[in-house]
Length: 336
Image 1 (spheres, one colour):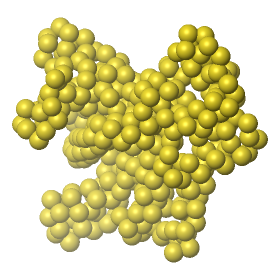
Image 2 (cartoon, rainbow, N blue to C red):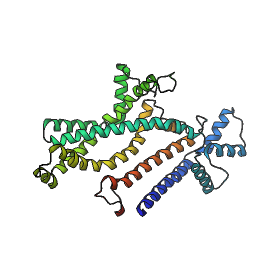
Image 3 (cartoon, one colour):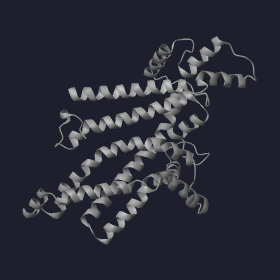
Image 4 (tube, one colour):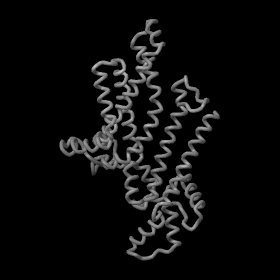
């Protein structure tokens, strides 16, 4: 119990540190969010001046900061607003940041969850087969292909898919999350359109990701096959299928569990470029749009959301690893 409280406390401290660091970095950027907000307002009013009191009121509404207060008071107001779920209002879209995140997060989660599951499923199965066929032409060929695909950046694969599959062959759409003009519903046509638009982004992540998993699984499985307890199991007459699934497969997959959770964080970061390439309206798409438009409230809101998601995944992996692998004691420190 003490270990769980300590790990949860460390995670909360990590999130708070990221919030403070993000707040200070944005404040230190050339021009600053308040000056940028003043310039945008003056531009929208065709050059008319804006009073300081009005500017402070708008800064508090859009960014949860009070320019007239000391920096530590501004930080306190900002953190207090975040704790109440108020992430400010987007300067570019004119909508509450929380609403934009709630609308875009499900699309990113759908894309990343499907990609991660497929990546690990293909990688684990392929790696296990490679280990049992060690030294064969299948093992050698799969190793070369896995190393090659793992070295290709996902955005290169995405651009190739767009050019070949969408532009040259016109087989799948190159952008968006659903066909334009379709009303949201549970109809077959609407769900089919969602799947159709997600194939290329998911394929870009899976094709360039499963190679690393398969190589890791191959190494773990070969190590397990050479263990003494496997020889003993053979001598005791345990069936080959039971040894492969219950002994070798299970123990070889365990080291990949932490990698599975941490990969979620890397894919959140990767979604920024991927969603921009496919104009997929997820968190990454809106984050890059916010950076280009210098939309500070939206930028900070999405960045903090991604940070919280990554910290939760790592915390979940740490707390559950001892349950997945009973050989590890959660009370002795880090579980992995």
